[in-house]
Length: 105
Image 1: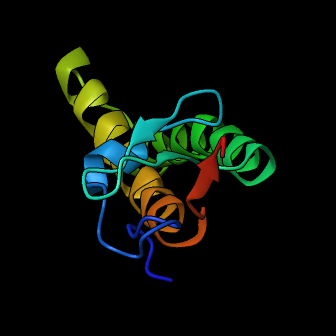
Image 2: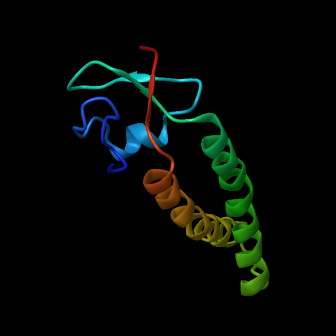
Image 3: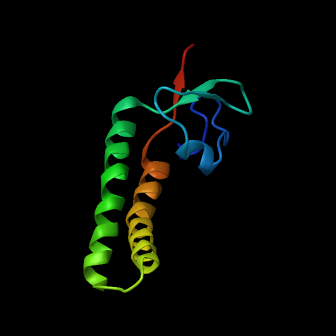
């Protein structure tokens, strides 16, 4: 099954942004068949924990690598770029490996 396909009908049912905003306590309707779709608890929560910590660590690591600045804005920019570099692979993993499941009957 493809990462954005409905588990009930097999058609692409979600956009990437909608899957990234979907959590285990939230379900949405498939645009094709109307089935309720969600993500499972354990893979979603494990990845959420990593998505909460790793971008912060990579942001701080980028600050350590770059060194000192005279401007606070440059510190913020380097931190945000480092955090984005750390978050990008995690978002890809979320899209690719957290499966969609059917909720209800």
